[in-house]
Image 1 (cartoon, rainbow, N blue to C red):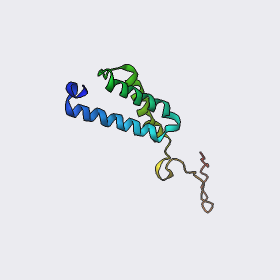
Image 2: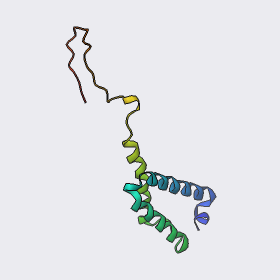
Image 3: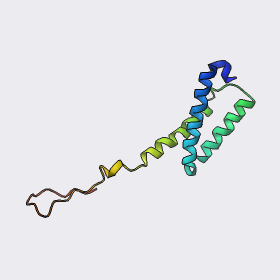
Image 4: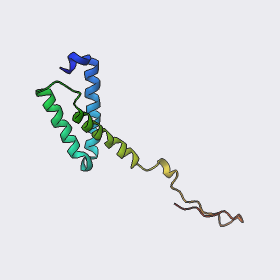
Amino acid sequence: MLVSNVGILGTVLFASIVAWALRAAWRKRSEFEPAMWALIAILTAKVVGEPNMSHPVMRLTLAVCASALVVSEAEKPSPGGVGNERVTPDPTSNSRRPIMRR
């Protein structure tokens, strides 16, 4: 029924967004496994029983699964340690710069 409402392009886009969200939730499954299984159950019920894809609970679980990608991006260390380095004065110079540590 989704194809009759949004066409082939819309169906492919919807399926790719769902697959992207489920893959992100699978990578962080220790935290997002309940939402991932809830989305799979809701989509299965929608395909079998009711073709209405604008159910608020489905959209909510899709958003929760997609938020797994944001969580995993926030936990990545910065590239090359930029912003994490400690600034210490050069022992051979006579400058009086303060030592900044993180």
